[in-house]
Image: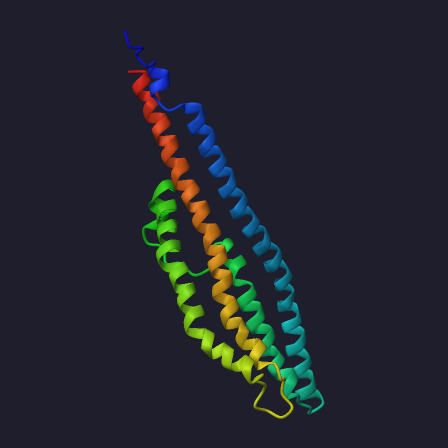
Length: 207
C-alpha cells in the first residue's frame, strides 16, 4: 500500500513560515531604523543653523542701523543658511510627521487603514515626486557646476552652484526617508493584518 503523506508533512510548517516572516520583519525594521537614525542625527545637527541664522541677521541689522555698514556677502549668507536649514531638515521633518497635512478622514481610520494610506502616499506620490524633482533639476544644477556659478554681485559669495546643489539634495533626502516610511507603513499594515487573522483563528477555534 502506498504511504499516505501525513497532514503535517503535507502542509507548510507554521514554524518555518513564522521564522521567515520574523526575519523579513527584522530586516525591514533594521533598514528603516538605520535611515531614521541618520535623519535624526542630521536633523538635530542642522537645527543649530537656526541659531546661526538669527545671529547673522542680528549682526546685519546692527551693522546696517548702528554703523551704517552693509555687506552683500553677509546678506547672501542668510539665503545660504536658510536654504541649507530647510533642505537638510526635510528628511527629519518627514520622519517626525511635521510636514503640512490636510486631515479629513485619516484620523478616523484604523491603524491598518492609516498604514495603508501612508504606504499608498509614499509609493505613488512621495517617491515619484522626489524622482521628478531630481530629474527636472539635474541639468539646471549641472550647468551651475560647469560654470562654477557665483553671485551676480561683485562682493557676493561665489558659491551659487553649491546652493543650487541643494535642489538635488532635497528630493534625495525625501526619497530615502520616504523608503523608511514606506517600510514602516507596510510593516504596520501586515502586522495588523496578521493580528486580525490570529484573532479570527482564535475565535473559530472557540466555536
